[in-house]
Image 1: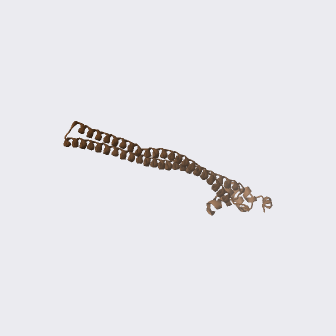
Image 2: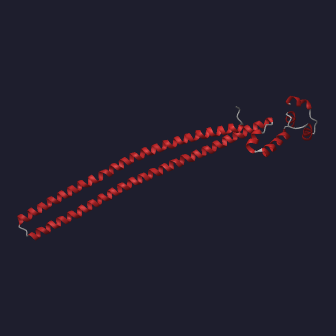
Length: 227
């Protein structure tokens, strides 16, 4: 079954647009996979760093507690051997305990800050990854739009060229399908005025019309060739 020029145009447009979309869909997928791989690597590294924080600070806390206990025992032993009054010994113990509490609290605050910073780094990493995805897709889709517009214009030029070629033979059906009856008739009349001999031979105008256009009598012998 023969297809009209308009059908051919639609087929060309759909097929070429599908090729362009497929190309840029693949580019989007490839870019997304690359960004995802980078993000997962960075996330794994950040998570590993975060997981080390609590054990590292626990080691410091254990050392701090062990040093406190050693100093507390040494203070007790010193008080016993030097004969310090119980009140003085208790004050020494209280001073050691207060110092330990202050140092221990400061250590845990540092741990909490380090954990919060690690979590913030991971959140920032996720935000940067999502922004990179959006930016990459926007850049690719902008190129896609340019190619689709270029493709549309190319196919439209092809359609206009093909339709114009048909007018060489006085056939304006393609323009009628594309632009409507009124414009096609106007273009047909212009063509007839430019090609009266061919129009008369093809039976598109009468002998009187030919005489009006050319000022000459028509050679009716040509009519039999086309009728």
